[in-house]
Image (tube, rainbow, N blue to C red; front, side):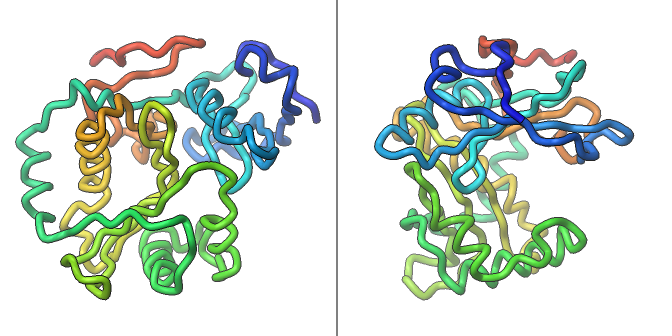
Length: 253
């Protein structure tokens, strides 16, 4: 079904792109509710990066060649959030997470799939999301997930040392935007779960963005009342997309 809601679509792009909406399906965050998504295809040639930047600023996320965002009637629970890297200050807990993982070395590599990454992803999914939609992902599926990006994207590998063959402990599929990083998907070795690697990778992205002079790290959607999304509030200052304006998320929200 074509989608034309001007309150969700970025001004101008609704005339140059075709947007569609999915059929209702069970909401993964709030029990008893249904979700719909508006989406468009980013694989449209040389303008993909510019369009992706505009859509990201308007609250869209990327999955392979598709940009999407929630489009649920009478529900606005899914809120796009991003961290202000310029004003971010490490907490005591953040410093402990960095210290626990100080042996890790970040290595940005091209968004090209490897068997090593795939094995790490399968171990992570089996441990954390064994009955989820990615549990039966094949290597071909993973290749399509990371290798088919029509926009600027890297895989940040985190290895236990600077050597090329050092053990791969964690990875983040990360899109490179004009104003920062968009963390598409992170995964790590479940044998190292006690190191807080998910937390560490977000911290590392924020600090790396700050070092590069990039103001934002996009974390996707935050859903008030959803335990699986509540962790995003710890990264402050956290900005939320309110209509077409980004503003500071208040502590009492």
